[in-house]
Length: 104
Image (tube, rainbow, N blue to C red):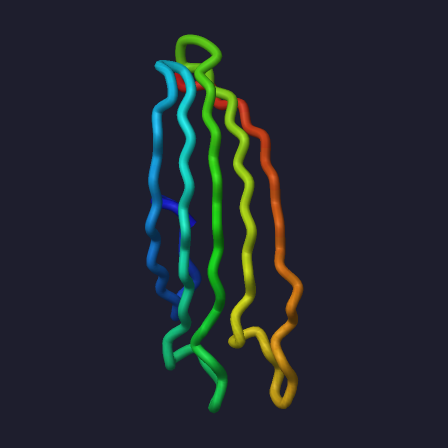
């Protein structure tokens, strides 16, 4: 959900994050994202609370223009995911991604 990532219509989000550079080649970051819906994309009585996400990133510079990254995230769905007359699911979503990036 960081910069440059499209957000579905009818939603907005707040992001607070921090980055720290441990060495010249190693840095890490942590982002907290809170997602909300707007009235335009909701059914009558549906909550605007889409949920929140926590993302951590570690980047290591392997060489000129070559970076290895590990990105881990967790999404906690909010009450907007509940169906009519039912409680929201208590299941969180988790993901881990490894990425090697070469910049031309």
